[in-house]
Image 1 (tube, each protein chain N blue to C red):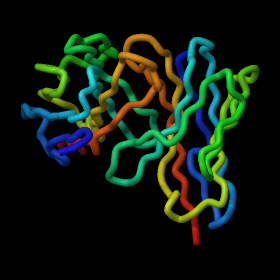
Image 2: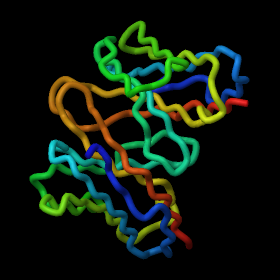
Image 3: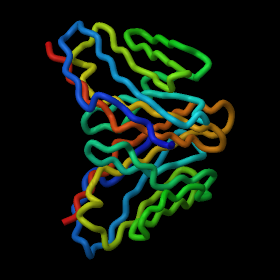
Image 4: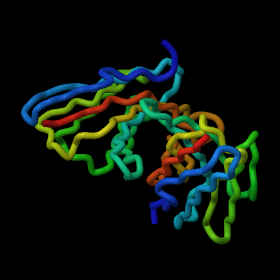
Length: 113
Length: 115
């Protein structure tokens, strides 16, 4: 129940295309859903996040779509660029006290020029 | 120095060695975390310290021993490790007062290889 399932494991997209990464969860106690981006040799960094009372959040080329009834959320990267090549992790948070994040297994994105 | 810094960045040790990983955060946060990152697996939360008190220990083997002397420093003491402990160990910090944004600030990690 504490798991967050992420797919696909890896993704290859042409420059200018749309990258889509999907995640699913079971625990309805999760109340915040961030996405993290990790470049090689670096730690993960927060990219964008959404609360379950919102169905979509957009920041620049990055959009989170959230389906509360299906317990699924996804990251869309529009006009994907080679600089977006990184590993993306979805996560789910149970608020209260410290930030207890449950991470997905990650998606390695490669954007080809 | 800014953000979260981890040392050493790379560490190779034998199974009988004793070593320590160090983490320092310069963000004024009150919570610090150790995560283990292995290939193709989710980041695994190991330990959490909130206001210097350990609040989470995710069934981590006793060969990993955390220490948090103050809210800015976190250590992970390693002894008699196994080859399967080879991984990237990530330190993170967060602020837990006020609105909870779910944001962790990660260091660049310490790549550990156990021979």
